[in-house]
Image 1 (cartoon, one colour):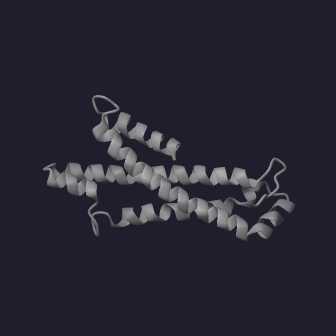
Image 2: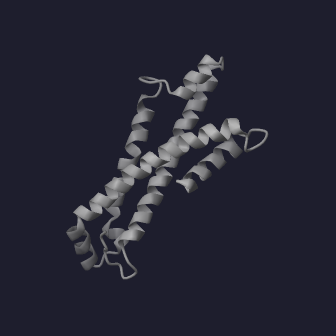
Length: 159
C-alpha cells in the first residue's frame, strides 16, 4: 500500500498539481488519506479472494504443477480474478460519480466557490488516482501472496 500510495501521490503532486512546495499539507494530507483508504479496501478484497481461491483449488493448482506449469502459470487465472474483485468497488464508484453521487471533494469545492469545471477536473483526477492506486496495490498484494504460498521448489504450501 505504501509503494502504490507514494508512487501515485508523488506523480500527482509533482507533475499534475505542482504546488509551490511539494509537501504542502493542504494537498498531501487529504490525497494521502484518500489513496490509503482505497488501497486498503482493494488489498483486503483481492487478498481475501486469492487466499480463499488458493485454499479451495488446491487440487487444480497441483495438477497444473504436475503437468509442468510454473507456479505463476498455475495460479494466473486465480490472480486475475482476485485483481478484478479488488477493482470492483473503485470501478463501481467511477460509474456513478456525478450521476448518482457527488463526492465530498467536488461538493466541498463547489460550496467554497470554486469554478464547477475546476471542481469536476479535480474529481476526475481523484477518480483516476483511486483506480491506479487500487490496481497497483492489488497487483502487489497478489504477488506477495503468490510468493507466500509457493516454496523454492515450486510446491504449493497452504497455511
